[in-house]
Length: 245
Image: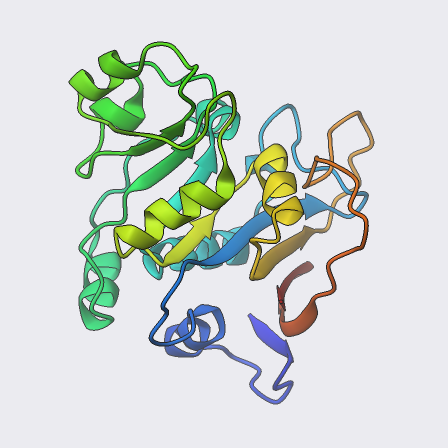
């Protein structure tokens, strides 16, 4: 893996250097959101409905590093279901890194699910060491069953999830290092609410055509959100970009 920006002379990146590139600002007093996506060169966010076919070894290394640096993993319900999410597990690298950085042993997964589409038998609930946080609406059915199954159900809106309220709830819990893993509708909502502090985007060296959507989907903004390039890495033919607010 090579650095193209900000230090093109740092040809081989150590794990420590990668941590510094993707780390969160110190002494956060509010949730800071890093959003992570992989995309084909022609803009597809999935191949055959999932993102795995777009990824590569370097992208996977950065993906797991970003999880290790976070207080919480934030994801939309559709992505959690399609990508078969479950609770994060301990491993030697993760345990050492999180202990050294003063983080909890494992981050919880927080799911945005306006209609409570996560079921009590979901792997997010049955295969986890840390109970998930489910952000939902007052109108959604099935909340008590999810609570009884062990999830922390948090109502943040009447008919729909209010993302500002959801982020405020994470802040109340001290979960300020937010690693958002999509999907496109959640990302679009986060952009519209001006809640995105950093986008970590991997460009996969593939042309896929097809009808896959782009990495964000949501309302048209009155004014585009301008970001600045914070880092650019190359791994083989993959390009990993970090843009910060």
